[in-house]
Image (tube, rainbow, N blue to C red; front, side, top):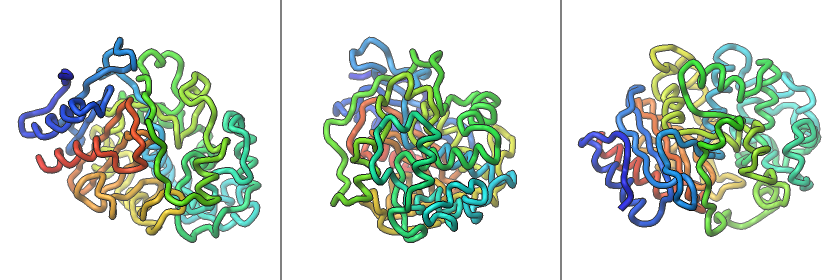
Length: 374
């Protein structure tokens, strides 16, 4: 039986039981689940191994690649820039970055870009995967590319491109990268362990991944899904390598602890406040989390409700019991959520990846048990 560690009061015993059941069923290698209410940690559990060989325990210091769960972090950073008046969701991206407006994208707003509506989910025609490591070349190719559908006519999930595009918009108005802003504005002053671009010093603490045994089910494959997920150049080469880990890919290569993610999402859950400090206004958070598009996504095989970078729980019921909760999930199963109505934030990280695109049963069982115990 896997030994569990951390904090879980008797009132939340159902969470501990669900966490233990995931390990007993062989669904986990190493994992952590953290939940907060009103900014206070009420559950924080971890267990298992941080490597496939079983030589290193998965503990409270373990960092985990969380892939697209980092998109929620990116959405929070963009929302803060909006709150500071540096960006506006209703302003065309081309006003901040003229080159982006090429080939029919001149009217695409920041709100449309961040809600996956600009028609650039991947490269078309395909590119070599090495292009992702050349940021200027990546941005040039995306600026020159025509949208794969009419911008604003529904969403099509951007697995990686959105991080490059939004990162450049942010850099142009902020003078800093998203990863630098995360470190300087959140990680260092608040002691939050979430990183976009992870230095070598942290490498020994990073969990080794056990990859999924089956590919995800994307439904019927068309040109849009092919470019987003299945072309040779749809994702950077060398995921998990030092070069991949060190570079900043805000949409895809965040490394974090579950506690760090839960604390960041508590900003959204608690009206913009973190540790008693107001960081974002409630008005801006309302803009960031309101529904901007809802319907059948053109890339993921689900009907999705997107806020400004946050995936809304509407119709999914994977981030608790409140349809207005928001969050994001990452390749393999990780996720983070915020529920402003209950002032709940939570995160799940693991190193045994599943093939679920959304709604991995492991975190869903933990989140459901948590809500049932509230």
